[in-house]
Image 1 (tube, rainbow, N blue to C red):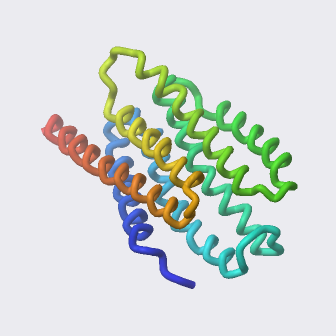
Image 2: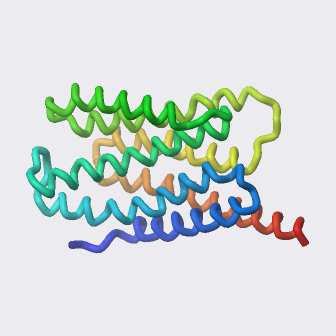
Image 3: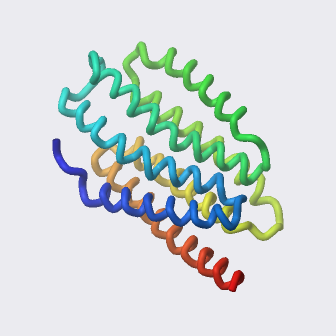
Length: 214
């Protein structure tokens, strides 16, 4: 099993830092919890996905798989799609002030229907791209509505907006670039930039909270 590449390792470290910062801020600012949960999901799930992906690649490229490789294949995609789903749920909670679970259940039902229609044709990448894109769109809708307001955005809204914007840039890089390896590297670059910005913003926010308490 090959070790993860340097950008991936850096991503795991940055994800952990963002999650730790967010959970610390959450104790003082409970409204930050949706973003903290999204950050925690990414920090926990991506390192879990890596060995699953490596095991699948060792079994060869292309579906269909069998046995544990097939189970890992489905699990990897479910965990991957969980990220934009969580982002969409946090977006509706933060920007629209609505409970996220009805939207998540609706997305799950839609993906099951799409998967039933597309998987038999063997177009698993097409399904993944469509489901991922729909989740990003679902995350963007409440953000777009919020942009029409003149109220100054909170720190949580800014951070979540940066994550959504990063996903909107990374999605076409991941699915439309002919060289998939290059597309993946470029999308990782966008994501690493968003993580670095989030770390800086949360650091300043946490320091401001401590100063106000002093």
